Image (cartoon, rainbow, N blue to C red):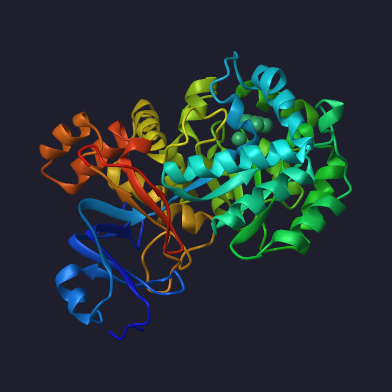
Amino acid sequence: MSIDTRKLQAYRASLLHFHADPAFSENAHAWHADGLLVVDADGRVAAAGEYAALAPTLAPGTPVHDWSGKIIVPGFIDTHLHFPQTDMIASPAPGLLPWLETYTFPTEGKFADPVHARAVAEFFLDELLRNGTTTAAVYCTVHKESVDAFFEASAARNLRMAAGKVLMDRHCPDFLRDSADMRDSEELIRRWHKRGRAMYAITPRFAPTSTEAQLAATGELARAWPDTYIQTHVSENKDECTWVGELFPQRRSYLQVYEHYGLMRPRALFGHCIWLDDADFALLADTGSAIAHCPTSNLFLGSGLFDMASADEAKALLSLGTDVGAGTSFSMLQTMNEAYKVARLKGSYLPALRMFYLATLGAARSMRLEGTIGNFAAGAEADFIVLDPQATPLLARRTAQSDTLEETLFALALLGDDRAIRATYAAGRLVHEREGMLA
Ligand code: GUN
Ligand code: ZN
């Protein structure tokens, strides 16, 4: 192996990452109990493997940061959440539609003010980093100022983030209503898409808040910009599904509304996907669209239980989202915890290794970013986190009893949260560090 030795940084710890989906492949993960992650001067992975094998290849004087006793994994990827909803997380309401009307729309109205938008974006991104999330697919509001504020704050931290302006032109308050005119979105795409690590996401909120004219214009925009993302909600809540049936009676299913307007394709991310049938799951798979399963949100709003077995049966791309502010935690560990329980309630079993896959490489594949983020392939961007199995007294006691990697990861997922994220690195740079319990 030849490594360019200019200004390398190395990190010693246990290493875990994936090159396949453990639900479908044996030996899908790489595990190095005493591992080394080597990062080059451009913030990319130079090598990942056994400490004993890689340490002798380092030039004398190469810094080796010692995280022994910790586990380095790729940064988490959250494929569905709303930055403007940060301040309204944990707002009580009996279900999705009253929650949107009572809290969400008034809260999002405040983002016409760029000063407010910037302040929330800064807090939101720091909160993601505290929770070990280095990439996310993020909804802004209808205000283009909210998108500028988000991407400016993201660029200042050099983060790989997808985000976009929400599109809605009916069934919403006047102060949030836009139109079928896509010029704002187009301007934002030209300004931000692929600028540094930014990626634009065309963001129709959900079918009920768009006229057919707006959905058609959105589909045309998506066709004109095939390497942007598309993100929206689908089949989250039964009342919502009934409403969509009334608004679009000519479509067989809610999902087919999006298909009809050209909004199903690679890089299309669909939040929730609860009330789908097998034909819908097949449509997701056939179009290369991806599912963002958001268990904390679905339990909080009482939306329903996602059917992972049917998604897997169809081989649809699958990932996890927090869906903050309907989601109740920024932590992908807590999101895994709830995903595990939802799977159990649906009669499935979700191993911890699969949960970590879904939060890393599974999400990167859903976003068509394999090779860029999501694992430690040589040349990938070095977004990684340091997990602390001793972060709390209880975690320390439980993980001391673990006989297997699966048990340790399971304890981290079930008992862990932001306290288990000892450090977060974006493109090789430390962007968050917390004190250890016994520091
Ligand atoms: N459906 C339409 N808008 C939203 C939203 O902001 N949050 C959730 N969870 N579902 C939605
Ligand atoms: Zn959402």
